[in-house]
Image (tube, rainbow, N blue to C red; front, side, top):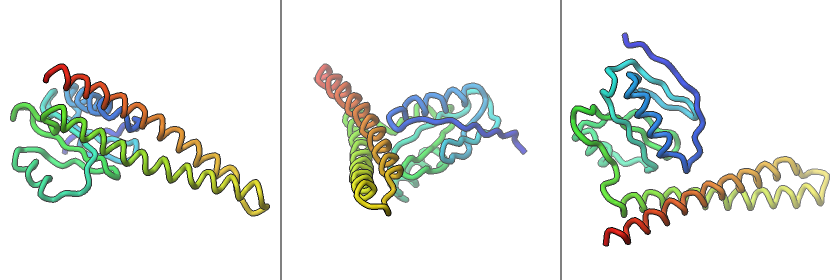
Length: 175
């Protein structure tokens, strides 16, 4: 039985590249990702550098998962829309995004989800505040939490848009 350990760590959605780099650093240090949960990562002992970890935001897709398994990738788990894979480094380079356009498309997908969830929080926050201020039944603290969440999500959206703009500039340099 392999030795395992669980680490709790928080990454914001725009920091997914930093999260992936950390997971690969753990693999370089002999700890391969073997399970994921909300802000929770389980690792098992492995040979240092044995695995490369990749993650992406993607809906459930059996055909895509089967394709990745065909090229040697192991499905580790999912947190809402974030999917985690690992593959033995000895099999060669392992990238889920082959070019700038696929990276931009991935960031745009993240942006659409952040926008939708942010707008929903903004609407509910505003409604909760208005009801709370006009009646004894309302709960203004819930409204403030919704507005705080909307603000955080919009901040993350801004960071994602910054990454998209940087990639678009990079694409122009290569044309």
